[in-house]
Image 1: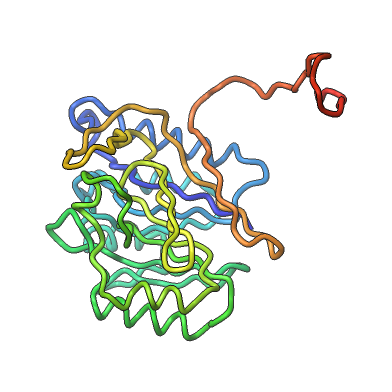
Image 2: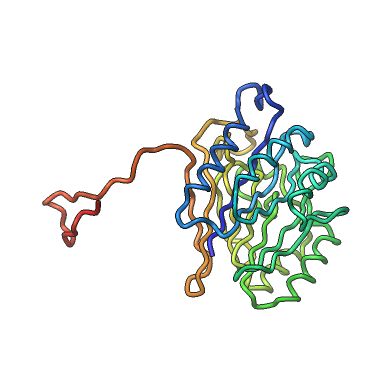
Length: 279
């Protein structure tokens, strides 16, 4: 099973770039092109939040048009830049798995790996939360299929990442949440967005993974007490490949044209085993 994870589109009304300079809409199209170029094609695509920049109807129309180009199933979740009701109304037209009201949680049972989407949004706040009701919902879903390979995805990371500018807008969780995750070793990953950087860490007996943005990134700054700045580093998305013998292995795929594939032609002084060049 192959899963492509896109995150943080930040679609804007046409002619109004993000932060005055970032053409996020063109970046969305480039990200979709990159997914379409994968061979073999992914079995599904996850989009982990902030599909819109301000939760506007025009922004969701742009997202819908772009995602309709993908022939495989697409699973979306809101982020703090989205407006839950507008998100559900606009995208529910294409994605019937989205609940009509309430938290936009859902499970997907159609693949070898079970997919559980969690809505972490708190209206009007940058950070998110998994409140008691959301944690109880997740606990019930995990009890239903204990032992089956599972992937949880959400917008806000429920763990610290060691960058102060990011860790001040986290996903608030209870003291019991990590224990819930650890009690289910079948959870292969907790996939997130929000921080616009590729980040991974050990978390509650599994791996927490943050995908980068499809346009702008957050500048890496490990100094204590610093704030976030954005930078036009190369955009990318994640590809998570699952096999029974390995579980999930995660890869980072840059978005853009970096030239053709080239064969390795080894120098005669190479100390390893000579190999025939490909091509």
